[in-house]
Length: 222
Length: 222
Image (tube, rainbow over all chains, first blue to last red):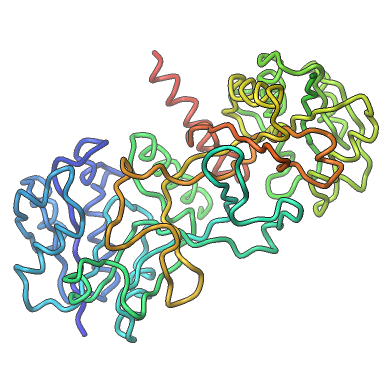
């Protein structure tokens, strides 16, 4: 079963301007992402869906096919689902799609491979999560504990934590997507990504953090 | 009703060595924390409970009283509750304690004042939380959504998010603490702290983030 890799990268992203082309270690985020997708060697083809000339140029430089998306899928209000649907309608040969978010610079090929292995092993959808140890309280006062007993607060070692979607990637069978779902089906799985690898670039400060994290890791290696 | 400020700062902290004395902008975290507590002008007295000479010295430099804590409260396994209980047993005059975590460098006096106002207005306990927009999934496969409908994923604007304890501070009436609780009572309240101010320093990478954030904020101002 072949899996198509897809990056949704429109030009007019909210928040930071041209987010998908931000340079990290002198390399645009999109190019970095495409390199990792090629390295994973688990996609039958790799596509970038965009409405922007500069992004299309970068996609080609990264060895990806370019899908010129319809304008209605590239507005601030359009969902990822809407953009994926438009893409697969143009590609009836596709049966499984892996959407990869190019603003996750610490994605690794091994996470993608694990996810693709699961889909090929029979899962309907697989996506990336991060395990966190966060105590949750009800909204509004008085507040009540949601996932702890304040009389017996667990140590980090005693508690496995909770799973949180991190947005790095979503793999889904096309029939599920046509039902309006990127996650679901009778076998819905996940790939755990450590917190330090799950950074999403969403603000100028995140870019700084990512740069410093790269420097720090390089120092640790040398 | 007077509120006592208390910083629990033992010498042998896990993770980073001498975490409480890490320098940020050339100032130890503990000193930074004590300055904010003084600035808040809402504590009748400010204490540092420690087993370490250097921390005691720094506490005095920061205008705090030093409580020499018993050894059994300063082990890796001892809880904050245990350390607070030992402290209040030595200070029978205290009726409300505010524990402040000195590894939260972006604490602000206004957050402490809001919390103390709530306690003085009748709450039994008040602590700091951060609102986050995180999608939670059940542990184990197949996984199921816990706080979203995958068919109708809410936009950030449409969803108020969830409240997560951030560990920056806990105010509690002494009678509650003697019951074994830092959070609870019939009126349990919270103070919301924005995510960028709720960083907790727990790893060398957090120190880097904190330093960069300070630089970034200074640039934004000038």
